[in-house]
Length: 247
Image 1 (spheres, rainbow, N blue to C red):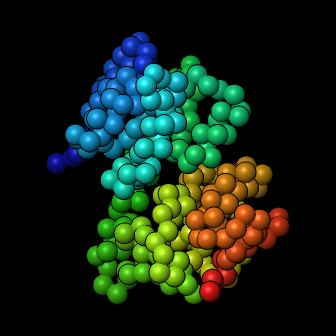
Image 2: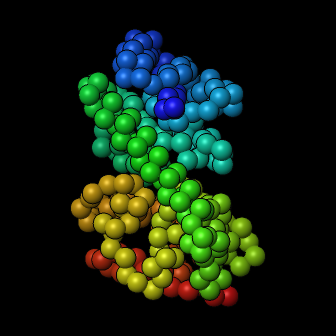
């Protein structure tokens, strides 16, 4: 029996909520409604959600704050997260992308674009879940931790260690690090990495801008001081190279 995807829509404008609810319900989705981030967190605690679609400017808890809560919770961190907002300036969109959200739709939006974004992100989430299940079920397959020098990652549990220290990373940071570990000492092009982290076909300039904050954050979390590349080496004009870290 086909499972109905559950979508949490968060917005403080009743007209927008009604429009989105009717559209998504007509497309066969289960729609959950919240009017701010606080209500959204209550729904997430009480029932399963397959995708979050939220406004940014809201009372009590805005979309940025909601995203921060979601990405810090291991139970919710893999849920596709989309911003739907009237904040259409380039700086706002760039900031949303750097946070690691899965998509950014600006108001006014077309219902066709809305449905396309929802279907695309749900399909991507299902593909990722399927690849993890296949890896776990494959005898002798890519199971267990990957080790490179002092760095160890567990693809099944999405956990990272540097030496004996546990390193807390976001979903996109983990995807980036795992990809680099599997291609250790290779120079990996920016366009390859942006496909992994953002599922985007992008040019060199945009890929560089989106990846830079992820790389910078990973370096700090792995214990390298500001200004040092550590084990993640920048190769100017091409991409990044992961070299085996040591004490």
